[in-house]
Length: 396
Image 1 (cartoon, helix red, strand yellow):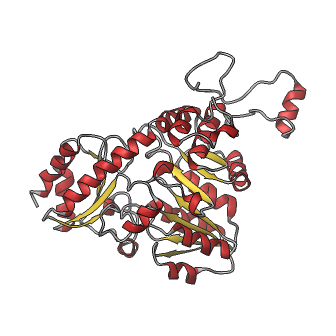
Image 2 (cartoon, helix red, strand yellow):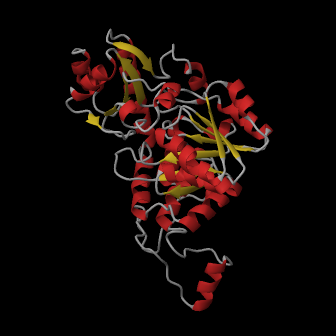
Image 3 (cartoon, helix red, strand yellow):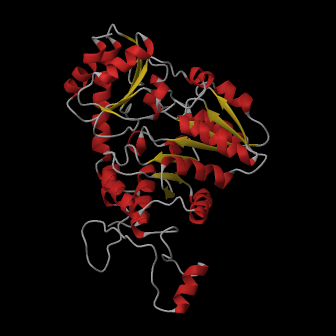
């Protein structure tokens, strides 16, 4: 156990294993799971004091829960942030940011290079409440500047992006946001705090789908928002009131995931680098999107902002959809699924799955073509992964 004051003196590996656990009177070594919906008081006066906020303490697991709080403290420590608020999914985390900080008449600038559901969230739901949304190219800083309006309140970015690994200049976007009294939120699900800490480059809020690498084994849904205590108090108020709360069991699963996060991200990155280099030299592959390749447009920026290039490799094969589906269908052990960030390698066809609901125009603008394949490179032996993908490539 460590106090919050101690946290800053420990290295990331130690924080990931030791932060946040307040040992109970039972003296347990492992973190307990508090599977309870509510909490009991000694008397009516104590209940009144806790409900009014005069005394700290748990009231109801929609508000706070000890297991969830342990996860929040640990994630905030890894990020080097003051606070984290856990949510029921990554999309719930993005919605929490929108609902906490936007109102009718406000304006959002969002990168075009974001997950399909993020586009839908802003276009279909946030826009219903009188919030205007503009989408711009991730790395066109002039376009971000030109899109700013007096009512702009939020800039939202994935970096690296899904699925083309486009890299944002976080500091430049933070400068634009702050010069215009707006917030910069970064979806850091692909890198995790092990490979990138956006707050160090000026981001105000960091959003996670904990379902991905924070879990790492495809077991549970969850999300989180990380940032300053002042900003996160607004996010907490929204989650407490509307209820997209993380379950205690899922929080415990994510705690176990954080303990091995550093080891896993190193190996995911190493395997992905080898696969990207193999695909880059393959005659049936037209283009590879991986920031670890020196020719990738975001390579230098990624090397500056990140300590590794991550585990997601996307590539375009010849023969369009027919070629892409041939590669996918001829894998033996790689899982055909839209999820990512798993120790098991996964493969998907973004144009018909993760980005399938986008219009043809939106797909084209986001670079989602029919020959595109996205692989979340797992921790299997890399030669086996390459062999599994080669089966289909050889048939094109």
